[in-house]
Image (cartoon, rainbow, N blue to C red):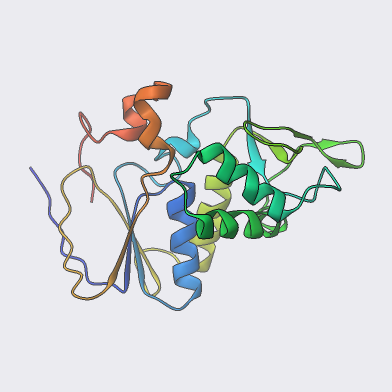
Length: 207
């Protein structure tokens, strides 16, 4: 039996991976009533939690190479894109990445260390060592964000609501905002991500 829900909220976030969880957290912090919709259980949905490698590379300048900077990082992003990339967005990513390291560490995410510093390598298309390693790939980030979301307010209730649904969800949003975060799952066919991470097929709806 299909279950449909009509939700009224300030912000609807579709997804529950790393990008969606951070978007929802910032929305709630800004004072908006926020609803997250995920096709699987929060904390295991999305490709962010699938360990495609032993460690994730979190790119942020200024931690491993003293000659690195947000400007160099931005240039690497634009050079790698070969054209189809927003310069403004590349600048935002490069400028804000270093601030996310202490933020994530404050949530309990452990960056691997090397001596007195961080373990970092020169990642794909990078000209400097800024790919900082997190054991367990993206899963520690998602779980840390999930804990923070749950700490800030149980769902359902004021501030937060979460819905797990594998059925089609219709939401009446009026003039409100919607964020859809396809995330790394958009590359599923290339990286052979298991279908249970990216597809709602062959699963039972739970709302």
